[in-house]
Image 1: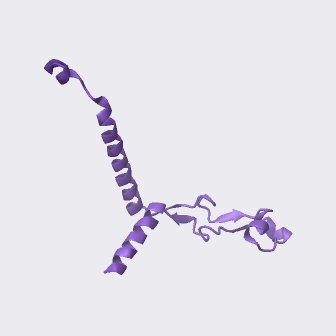
Image 2: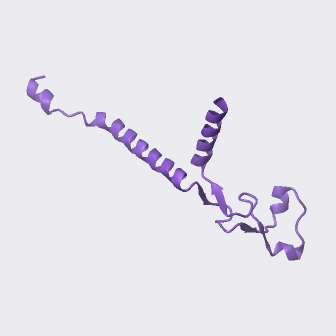
Image 3: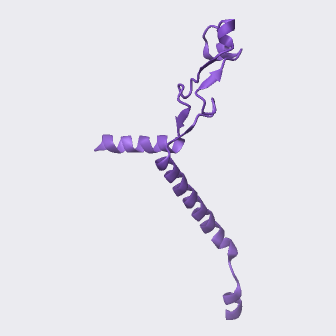
Length: 106
């Protein structure tokens, strides 16, 4: 291999892992900022309303008696968000757990 060939050959595949690492780092930083600025997001189960409609299969899933026919038409409090319509982001839960461990260690 001559000096000219060595200088002109490019190793484009060596930059792909660096690009992937850079994109991953940027995405992680953006998500961490989102978790810090806005730690809560809407509940996916009730779509942020805080209530969910009664369903026929609820008594099988939650192991309680089926509601009365009149109560079956109404809405009930969402069991996942407890009626607030908000839930804590997964990244914020991880951050809270790490902060809690750090404080317990000191």
